[in-house]
Amino acid sequence: MSLHHNPGTDGLLRALPPPCYLVIMETGITPATRVNEILQDYPELTDRLMELGLCGCGYGPDHSLRWELRRAAAENNIDINALLDELNSLTG
Image 1: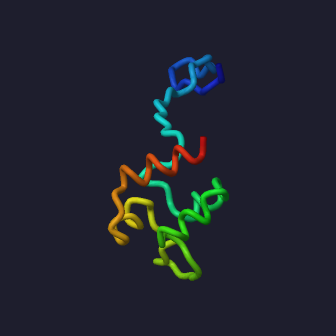
Image 2: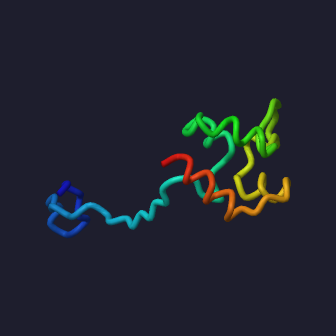
C-alpha cells in the first residue's frame, strides 16, 4: 500500500489502497491492430500482408500502414474475420 495524504482534520498520512483499474487486454491481432504494428510485432507476416495488398511502400498520415486492420480489410474487400483467423493462426 502507498501512503496518501488524507485531507482530514488531523492531517495524518494514512495507508490507502492504490486505485483499482480493470484492464481487459486482447491478445494477438485484432481488428483495431494497425498494419504497421503487425509488421513490427510479426515480421513473419510481411509477405502475406503484401500478397493481400494490405501494405506497401508509402508514407503520410493516412497511408494504409497506419490504418487499423478493419479498415485495410474493408478497403481491399477482405473478410475481416477470415483474415484475423488466418493471421492469428500464422503467429502461433
